[in-house]
Length: 614
Image (spheres, rainbow, N blue to C red):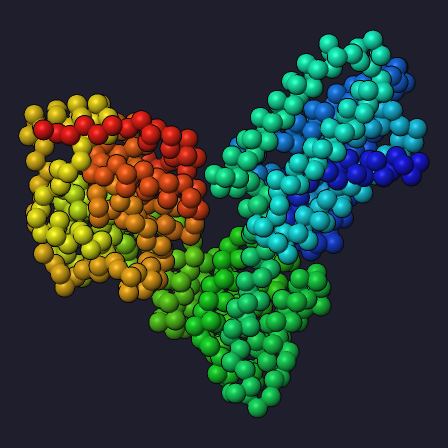
């Protein structure tokens, strides 16, 4: 009896390590108290696995036990392979849109989410040859709760440092062991001979090696599964505001003694601690007292904490969980505004309410909130995909990545108007390199705005010349033919209006690189090869603006740009891009594409030949 409980618990536990049960548990733990999440997991699993155990017990009444054991062995081997499959295309958690309170919502999500999953199939398999089906049910439900609890705990403590590959290999090994054991015990001895065993082991081994290789490749490429992403989110969620609050306090040098929870920040710290221990019912939501308003707190840190809280409130729907976030919001507002806003409906209305009290503070909060949005929500392409013109919302206005051909300027201005953005809101131009299709209307932008130009030192002299360099050559015969045709049609001189705006340049060098990166909220990456002055932008370890280090469209092949000045530098640039941490590339020509596409084509660089235009 105890053995059946333990075996069921162990198999379910390893089956769901790194699977969507843990992902769902982590996600729900950001919205509901942990105790209620675990209770919901237990109820949902009990209903789901109860059906499975009944079905398994029913099958055992008319199918021979030996046959069931054999089927179970095959099933366990299948579960081992299932555990090793890559999850890059697997849907993230599918939470129920219908809300029945914390416990009901979690229970429904787990009941529906586990239908037909390997844990339900495992429960059926175990119950089919069990002497005590109820003990199997107890073990499987306990395994589900244990897996969910571990996922929440590890997510909080480790974030994205979870050894997911090791977990998968361990889980697969357990299933494989039980599967092979059952087959050896149930298959007729006449089939347990080398002529049958050797091909089976070789085939199974090759399949396992292939699947492990895919997992290793996925990890090398930096592709993150839903488990890692959710773990990072949960970890950041619990840790970040605690750090902010610790930095806001200026210490006893300004206060004669620490008032602890009687201080507005001390009170906020208590709120966070109680919320993490799931004691929201004990929160004093009205615990803001005017006598504690005036203290010499670090206002910049207060802004940061308030914007962090707004971002959390944007992504968490459950009002019970938001009770403590609302209180922290009010505490921060009191420090900044000497009063707090009673009701928070949505971000836009909230910021407008702040502006009515203090316009300057409202504008600053709006800017800080804007740059916390995901980078892809802040990108507007004002080009035409053939020649992209990316406009990025930053803390101080807009950053324009390149200025396209001279002929694009009028259309660019029309698109700005359509988005209700004024030209003078462009505060920086990031020049990926000095070519006619990247600096074509730079002079017009400089005349119409006060924008500064961020560029590579080598780009200064190239802009002065107003002429593309013809050093190097085309990267393929197709590209060479295309360039020849363009030349025949009078488009081959690649000249543009020279630019001499030295007083407007922010030339990237060792001394000012970090300062410029702070202005942009991004990392500047040198990407030579296409040209010596090529640079790119890496945002939030998520998006890489590659300029012409890559291309996605005709006449490019394999995302390789059609013109290369220095092939060795270009190969090194691709190696650099392969090692950087991001998921999507935004090229200057063509639509954005995933990093895995670049990694897939990196071997093509070894067969590239340069075809000069003479």
